[in-house]
Image (tube, rainbow, N blue to C red; front, side, top):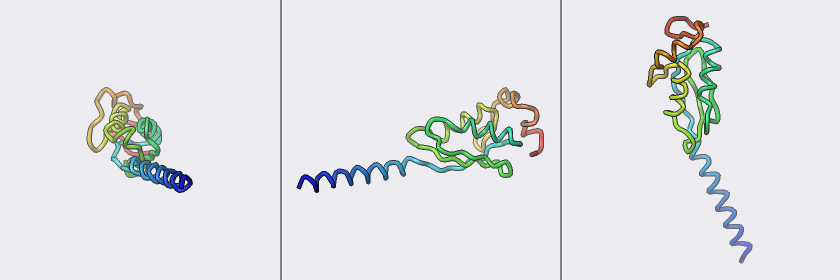
Length: 114
């Protein structure tokens, strides 16, 4: 009887922890303006933070793909870090002083992708 109880408890814990972890990971995409490979590195570095598991920015489409734990962070926090790095998103424009700090080759409002 004790063996059955212990087995059921262990199975319940395993099932609960597996379901819990799956519910927390969110996959999303967001448009982030950039122009070059330096932008890619800056955008991806800014997007990483607590709870972020995966980021990849595509220069050709300006789309940032990401996966993050919703119990650790949210899209607004991630977007805030990107804005602070000087890159505009689909929801907000970067502040002028942050944009001005970008290297000349990264000024996406003025240049063409390279």
